[in-house]
Structure formats: structure tokens, C-alpha cells
Length: 296
Length: 322
Image (cartoon, rainbow over all chains, first blue to last red; front, top):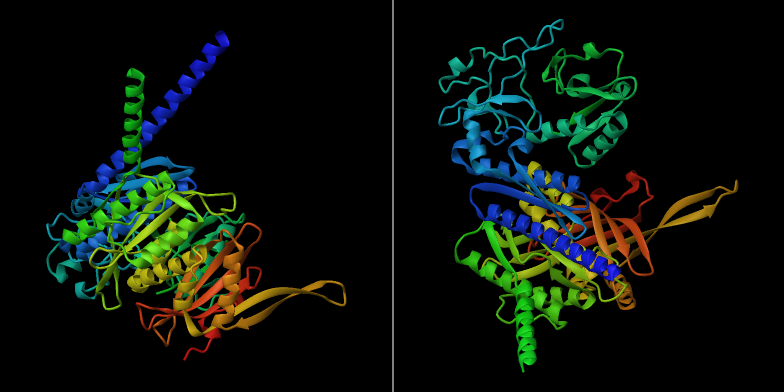
């Protein structure tokens, strides 16, 4: 009798659990569709074997949506490389199972993207801080070329000067700190900044970010091979085979093969993409290195 | 009497419940407006519902009332003959993607990410149970094609490259054709193969041959055989006849445009071939001629074993294209 009632209890408990799980999935699915139907959000989703993979692809797709959205906004057209601050922290994520696969849905409020006009943002790929002025029409987009800092003081306390005429600036450049909407002459005034700005276009910046995430020399080599196959990296190799040091970016490793940083192209002074400050090859003398040349 | 009434009521209820379970509502969230949007949504909802109803009842798919081309019904039918499937969600909201010609004109639309679960008839099925389909529409909103999609990661990567190289629209077209080409193997669609291969297509197949050297160490060498279109298709017909189910996977797809002939594209991919009794993996290189972008042709198809050196993999430079 007791065994029978135990069986009944387990069956009931199982049925209850199954129903609850199924209802939870349905609720998530309904919430996802509610967001998709709302015109206030940009969204993307991916279903993959693991949640991490799905999240990665979903965020890639979301970035594409964000880029397209920015491109479609007249007042933001010049800022098509401006990405909202650390997109993962501003966006929301929902996950659910789909059979044995993981479905990840990510979304971000359009207002948050439009809000970049009044906020300090970070290039999602580089982590470089970019402040955008609160002018209702986005100030002409221009990049501050990095001035050569003295070797003994590679940290960029040196003022960054805007020298690029507005109409010659490539579309993929990003706005800089304290840019007045006024004349070019005024723009030539030094801007107070302690960090350097990335000198790369969007996809190049993402390549650097992907490489910085690799961690060690084995992973970096594999990544470089992959990037070469994708025509994003033209060539790479060991220091003794570098055809033109100034044209190449340099990946610096410690003695254990762990990545220290990546230095941009340049002669005396280069951008340290991990620290986002000026540095030079001389600062890393004696360390292991690989060079690579980015495609244009 | 009371019992009969209760049973009848329960039967009626379960019928309604089953019907409700089969029903799928499809909606586009963005990318299209107006009457074409409504037409596409209606056609998609009806088609997905009809698929679920056919799966539940064990009958054929009823296309009555659905704006769908013969090509798409044939595509679904060939898939259906091999494996049944069912739409996972009953309420689907998706982006509408625009397919553009090289002059920027919209030549159709696409819905992706529609999750389906495969319901194999027997144990000969060798593919993934969870898959995603994409549906193509002509400019009037009529369903023009139906395919199982490739991995989402590849799609994202290729589209990103397309943005960088400023040929995203053409890449979307190529991907669509590559997806169709893969599906033609899965669906055993010999007619598609007849159409897509150029009459003077060159088909090259590599085979690793191990020879015994004098010092007893085996030496691997790749031997190539070339075939014409008909010879290749005759072999394919035999393979289709002898296998209940074929699963073909395309991975690591790379697309390269010919420098001097911009309508020619070289597509390199890793092909996984799975049947119940045989499977292999190889590097496939395809030269597509997009001179007629609505009817692109395969000029070259090569297969090489995966153990081959990277430098020996065929590229566009290995072939003289007239």
C-alpha cells in the first residue's frame, strides 16, 4: 500500500515538475516574442549546442543590428562605428532550452543607442573610452591622431590634437572627447585627454580585441592563421622575418608565452591596445614577439 | 449514456487540442511593411501549420490556400520523403531579410531561424534532430524556396566579411545557392544538380593513395580523376538510389571573388558526407559563375581529402576560366 502511494507521489511530483518547466519555457518564449514585437528594441538570437556559443553568436548578430540601426539614423550616420558602452552590460539576455540545444536571445533598447549622443561610451571592441558631446546634431566625426610622446613618458599625458579635416575623415572613425561643434580652427585646439584613441577602423579594432582575448601564443597563432584565411590579416611571422617593422603590429609575450599586449603600427611610438596608451617596441625589449600586418 | 457523452466530449476536446497544437502563427517584426508583409506572414503561418498537421496525422502536406511555388513544394516534398519534421514554436516572430540583386534591386525576401525538430522514420537518419529552416519569398510575398539552413556561426562570419568587402548582398545570394546545393544532396534532387552544373563543368576528385617506399615507409600521394557533368551525375544517381538518407554538412565556408572576372566566385568548404554505411570528410572547392545571377552555374567542383596540405587546396588560380 505504502509502495503504491510512494509511486503515486513520485509520478505526481514528476508531472508537476515537467509542467512547471514547460510553463517556464513557454513564459520565456512569450516574453521573447513580446520584445520582438515591440519597436523599442533591437534583438538577435541564436540556438547552438552550448549557451556560451549561442550567446557569442547572438551578440555578434546584435552588433550587426546596432550597426545597421545607427547607419539608418540620419543624425547618427557619421557615427557608424560608435557602439554603445560595453554592449553586454547594456543589453539583456534570456536563455532557454530548445530540445538539447541552447537558445539565447539578446536585446537592447533603441533609446540606449540614441542615448550615446549624451553619454560617455566605450567602443565595444576596443574598450577605448569615447565621449560624445551633447550637441543635438552629432559633431563632425574625427579622430585624434596620436602624437608621438617622448619615449621616457609613454603614457599619454601629452595633449591629443585634432588635425584631420572633417571632410577627409573616413566614415568609420569615432568621435572624441570635448569636440566643439564649431570651426576647424577651434578643433585644432588641444583636447584634454589622458588616454589615446584607437587608430583603427571598426573591423580592425575587433580583430585586435579577438587577439587580445586569446591569452597565449598557441591560441594567437591559431587565431592569426584563421584571420589570414579570412583575409583580415595579410601576413604574420616571427621578428626575424618582418619585412617592415613600422607597418606591422606587434604581439608581445612573456617568457611563458602568455600575451602581454599588442602594439599598433608605427615607428617610435605605437598604441598599446591593452592599456590604450602610448608605448613602443623599445619598452618590451628582450621579450618574445610576433608581428602581423592588418589588411586595409 | 452519461459515459458515452463524456467520452464524446473528451474526444472532441482532444481533437481541438491537437489542432491547436499544430497551429503556427508567424509574424515579421521588421524589415518589411504593407500588404507584402501580410501576404508573407499569412503564407508562412499556413505552410508551417500544414507541415505540423501532416506530421500529426501522418498524411501528406496540404498546400491548399498557400501562395507557394512548385520549386518550394518540390523541395519540401523531397525532404518529407526522407524525414518528417515539425515546427518547434507555435508563435514565431522574425526579422525579414531582403535579398538584393547586384544593382541593389530587391529580388526577394527571406525568413531564417525557424526551428524544426526532425522526426525520423527509421534509424537510417544520420542528421541532427534540431535544425533550422529558412523560407524565401518572391517580391510579391509568394513562397519561392524552402531550405534547411547552414550553421548560424558561418552565416554571421560570412556576412561580416561581406560588409567589410562591400559585397554583402552578393554573398547572401551565394550563401542561398550554397544552401540549396547542400539541400539538393539531402533531398536527392538530381534535377537541381542537372540545372546547376554547367554543361561543360569540370569535376575533380582526389584520392589519397599510399605507396610502399623502398625503406618500407608508406608514402601518401593524392591522385586525381576528372569527370564531366553527366558522368558525375550518373554516379550521383546511383548513390541516391542506394541510400535511404544522405546527410551533407558544409563547414568553414570561404568565399573569394575572382580578381579579373568579378562574376566568378570561388567557394571553399569542408564537406561532411554521412550515410548509414559510409561517411567521409573532404575539402570541396566550387567555382560559381554568377553572370546570370538568377541562374548561377557551377563551372568547377573539386573534392580533396582533408589530410592534404593547405597549399595544395584548389583555388581560383588553378583554373583557367574563359
